[in-house]
Image (cartoon, rainbow, N blue to C red; front, side, top):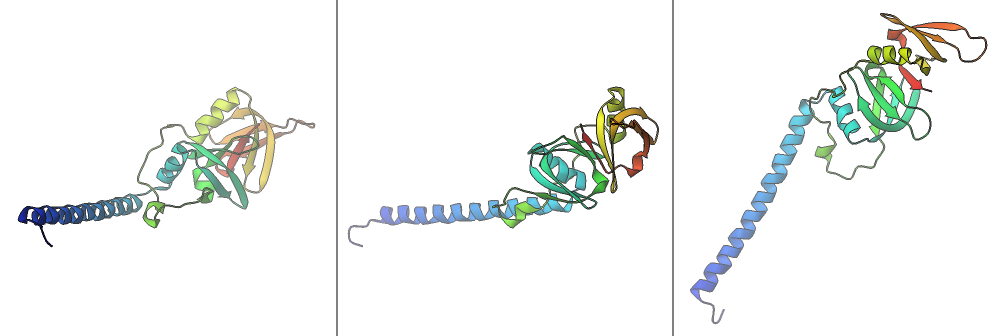
Amino acid sequence: MDGETAADRLIASFERWAASERGAEQAAARSRTTSLARQAAATATWVGVLIDLAEQASAVAVTVGSTRLTGRLVGVGLDFCVLEPDRGCPALIRVDAISTLSPLSPVSAPTASLAPGGQREPALALGLPSVLEGLTAERAALAVHAGAILVEGEMVAFGEDVLTLRAITSPRRVTHIPLDAITYCELR
């Protein structure tokens, strides 16, 4: 190249070197991101995944037994999560009763970011029995799902391992439900 000085060639070399360094830094950053995502996935817990989704108020589909519930996941306790449906009443779902959970929003991120998050503890340090006991004091109306059985009524008593409801409609029959049988409750 005519008129190109040694200094021009040196500056051109520096520009090539800087471009090469930027490319190497970007590749290293992508590698670190992928590695961190793999590490988070390797230490993921079921409750941690629920917490991650609840913090984003993610729209999800939850399968409990043969029932599919949809809504925004808005909270996680020690052994339950709270699902707010588009229509209807909030549901308190036992974490161990959920057979599948799928986010409803489309995913456009790289595959590595689809992996679940890490180990987390719920900020809501309450278990479902404590919540139900509190709702009993308020005589809350619930629809309690115990497997394939639905019982609707007003909460009238809460014991160590049993919930008692009184039907809202006539006849005002009383039903006792063992806590272990409850898969989810809908507040009315």
